[in-house]
Length: 301
Image (cartoon, rainbow, N blue to C red; front, side, top):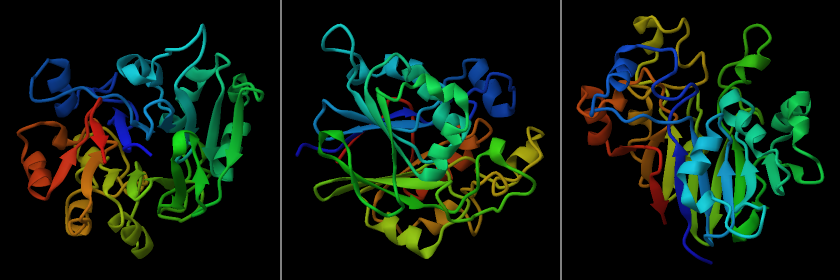
C-alpha cells in the first residue's frame, strides 16, 4: 500500500474566511488585503493511499471551488468520471453536507455516515438529486472499521458535541456522545490520521484514540469561549455551539499538549485571531507545538 496522503481542501469554519457578510477585526484584514492573513474556504479533507481513489471527508458548500483548486480531484479518464470514490461525513451540519449537491451529475461514489447523519439527509428531499443508482448510502456503526476505495480503512467514533443547528429543538444536549457528531480515523497499514472538526469537550477515550495517531487535525473554531460575544458577532459561547476553545486552562492547547502526534488546527472561525500571522494567539499556538491548517496543505505519512 502507498503512503497515506491528505490534502486540506478547506480550513475555515462555517461561513469561510473572510465571511461574506463580516467586517470583524480579523475579516477586515482579509477584505483589505493584509498579507498577514490568508483566506480559507470551509473545512474539508481529501485522503488517498494510492493516488487514484480519493476520499472526501465532509462536503462543504465550497466543494466546487475546492475541487477546481485541487488537481488530483480533476476528472482525468473518459468523457465523464471523477477520482472522488467516496465521501465520509462527520455530521449533518450545513458546512459538512451542503457540498454533496455539487456532486449530483451522476458520477458513482459511496457515501458513508452514521445512521443519524444519513437520516438527516434522507429527511431533506433536496438530497434526492443524488441518484440512488449512483450514490450508495452506507450506514456506519461507531467504532466499527470499514473499508474505503483504494485500500484505506476507517472508523467513525463519537465526539462530545450536539445535533446540527437546524435540527435543534429547544436547548440541545451539549457534549453528548452519539452518532450526530463524530470524528473519523483513517488507517493505511500502520499509519493513522484522525480528523475531528467539531468537539465540545475531550474525554479519556477520545484522548487515548488521538494519542495513537500519527497526525491529528482538530477543531480550532474559537480561541476564547466568549470570543463572538465579546466581539459582537454572536450571542453564544463556543461550547454552546459545540466547540471547545483553544485557550484557557481547559482549552485544547493545554489538554492536547501532551500528544506525540503531529497536531494541526482546522475548522477555524473567521473571528479567531490565530488567523493573523503575528498575533499573540498565533504565537501561543505555535509555541505549544500546533500547526495552523491552510487550504491546499498536503500531509504525507
